[in-house]
Image (tube, rainbow, N blue to C red; front, side, top):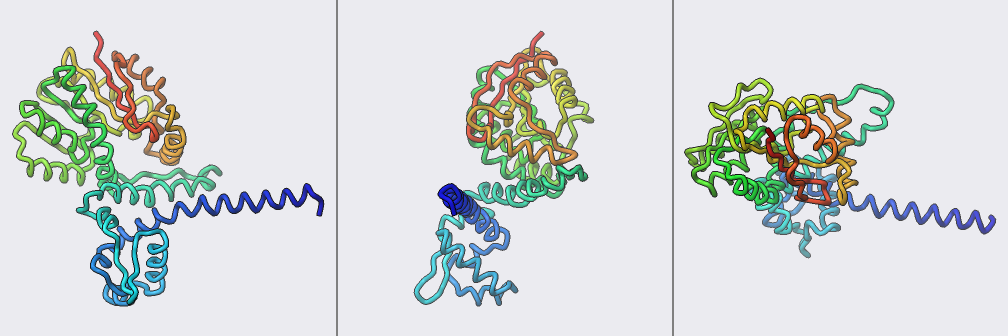
Length: 338
């Protein structure tokens, strides 16, 4: 073997080691996903023997034992000297009802939606039929993950509302009505209206709104493209993470209709990823790869493309401000022009 061949062999080994280490980073996400889905962290909350849990809940004992070993290895579980296994406290915060349940929902979305789709790219590249996104199935999970972004985006929305002296707000695609409920708590005299096309999500939004007892908040199950509009023009329209449901031509129609629903000095507050924006290019590239794999989802626009849509439909781009720069999430403020 020549020196060059030996060097090539060592380089191959180094690359293999590099990718093995890279793939190991996937293990914690997989472990949390299984734990949340099968409620395993709850089963081990107070400490238990894995065979007992397997028998009690009808689980495969060998697979559960391997999941436990993986959990101990990545630091999600701890094993006592007597063999009992305990879920670490922070893991319990990811389950439904926990302080960080929206993070758990984000992991479910990644594992159930994004990863399976991206793994189908070889088949899709060969010209096979693209996928369909089933909003009825995945809508509630997507709505739940939006609450993560909501906490970071809300201060920008509230600031924009104050700056433009808005007295009425329409949220198109309001999800679980998180933004409207937050606005209603802070600004008691606002007129608030939300529409949501997913019926199950709309019902959950209505349930949450009733619990808040906000007198000026109205929610309904409706599609913006068929909806006749509010009884009176609104000062501010929110569009949070909805552009991927509209192809470019329909995005212009959406902005055109929104313009008709706005008061003379009205504005739009958009929360959206921007494709290949500085600082978040890897995330937005993966996000748009996921969107493009579907018949009924559409890639997010670049900042320049969004500005072109807006200007064609009679808006000025007043501000483009990062919310999560690493994820290409931005707040975009549009003002209605005469």
